[in-house]
Every structure is written in C-alpha cells, then in structure tokens.
Image (cartoon, rainbow, N blue to C red):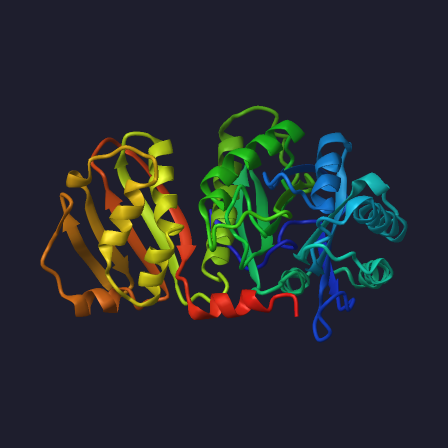
Length: 407
C-alpha cells in the first residue's frame, strides 16, 4: 500500500470543483461538487440522531433505492436541518439542477449540507452554484483540494487523504475528503466524509466494507460529545481501475478494506486533531482488554472526559482523571491492575503501575504532553483485545467559537 497525494480526485474518473455561492460566508468558496465520469456503486452511513437533516434523508433514499450514483453536491454554512418539507424539496431542486447540468438522472445525485441548524437554504444561490461548478470540474488533484477547502465550516485546515494498492494486477486508488471540527461525537458527527475509488466491487460488499470500517474510524472520534443531525459518509466506486469485479470476500476484498481503513482513519484523525479551538490531537489506546467492546467503551470514556481534555490542554499529567473516566465508563475492570503511559514525539513515560502512581518527573511529563499529538496508553491486563479512540484538548477557544457560531 502506498500513500499518495490528493483526495477525492485521486482515483481514476473522478472530478471536482468548488464555487463561492454566498450561502453564509461572504469571502470564500462554500460549495463543492464531486462527479464521476461513469456511474458508481454507492454506499453510505449516516447519523443515528433521531433529528436528521434533509440531506441525510435524501441520501439514505438514494443509497437504498437508486441503481447508481454519479455526483455529490455539498454546501457549507447552512445545514438544511429542521427545515421540514421545504428543506427536503430543496434537496430535490439541487439534485434536479445538477441532473440537468451534468446530464445524469436526478436520482444519481447525492447532496450534503453543513452549518447552522434551522435556517432554510438560499436555493437560488445553491442552484446558481451548481451551474457555476459544472464547467469548472477538474480531475486534477488541485480540484479535489479546493473542494476539500470549500466544505469547511469552523475547520482550520482542509482534510484529504489517498492511497493506492494492487488488486488482481490493477492499480486501485482510494481517496477522500472530509470536514469536521465541532459537534463531533459519532454515531456519527457534524462530519461529512466523501470517499471515492476506481475499484470494481458489488454494491453489497461496498456497503458492508464501509459499515464495518466506520466502527474503528469515524465512530472512534469525539470533540465535544454532541452527535450532529447531518453526519454523512458517502463512498462511490466507479470500477474504472479495470479489476475483475469483487463479488465475494476474498483476498482482493481484504486488500480494499485495508486501503479504505487507512483513508478513513487518516480523515478521522484529521478531524479530531482539528477540533474547535484545540491545540492537540489526543489519542487513547486501551490494551489488554477482555473484549473489543470493553476496549472501545474504556477508550471513548477517556477521550470524552472534559476534565481529562482540560488536563491535556494544560499539559498536566493528571492521570487520576483518566482512571476516573475509565471507572464510570460502565466497563468492568480491576483498577489495581492498570498500567498507564503517556507518549508523544517527545518521549514515553509510565505514570502508574498496577493502579498506583510511580515516581516520575512532572517536567518530563509536561514536555511529553506539550506536543501537538499526545497518546495515553492504558493496559488493563485482562486479555488481548484493544481499541484506539481519538479526541482533542478542551480550550478557552472552544467556548468562544461556539458562543457566537451563528453570528
């Protein structure tokens, strides 16, 4: 497997464009379009929030019922959530506009929105934005990069990733882009992720690969514990790599799943590390668990602990907060067997052994915790299962950003 430059346009046959439609932001691009030269098998996973945005409902229907998909229209600034029938009708109008401009069926157009909840989309600007983007579609890597920038809201940087693998003698590319910075707590989050591949694969196996992979990637991140109305991950496969179509779970399928995992995990970590106002990506690894479920529960309890997140911001090795979060997680373990380590580019330091503090240098601990990526490793010594979760520190700026988000 080889990591390569690019995002949604890295795979053969995919193009992208963006435009400044003036939906909410007045000084930047705020719409993106992803298009495949040929029809795609489509898979998707969506928020489990009972309150689902109109684009989520639209995409669920397309993924479930349409023969294929070929385009994705995304806007930033307004979420089109809690907008009733009018909001859903705007999804249809967006798809209809893209259908006419791209000369593809309306039911082959997926839509996605992110931003403020409760506001109606300025549909005339949306439609004009679609029409403006179609002539600008480009298969260059820069086309994907500009699209990744256009879908940002409070994100501070664009997020994309791509890899290549060999499958049945053919070079297969998987690439993607995402946005997400706040209201991040999957099942899933105010995250939008769009992954493209030129692999030939059955619709059923494409959906299974995506559904299985999000459990260890997007569903293992948290910024603030809020599960959004708009969570969407869409995966399009256009078959242009020319490999024999994957129709069973063979070695080719496993190779693709590994490539998909690398792209999704990379994008997930980019979101966690760009949490609103954060200064550090906070990774928590739980080892020696009795089951995967136990490891997941314990690791996610730690990354969602506000006290622990605040300690990471302060570069404070306050290990009691980590053990406390593990204790109220609901998972059973023996706290008197836990070993805990902090790790970063600055070094590795064991803080507790068998639930008891070891003598350590607070200065060394602070140095390790001052890096932009910090890891806590907890070994509960119960078995061989493990899990990794990703979050970020909790800073003053998080409150500032969310206190005036609508203004």
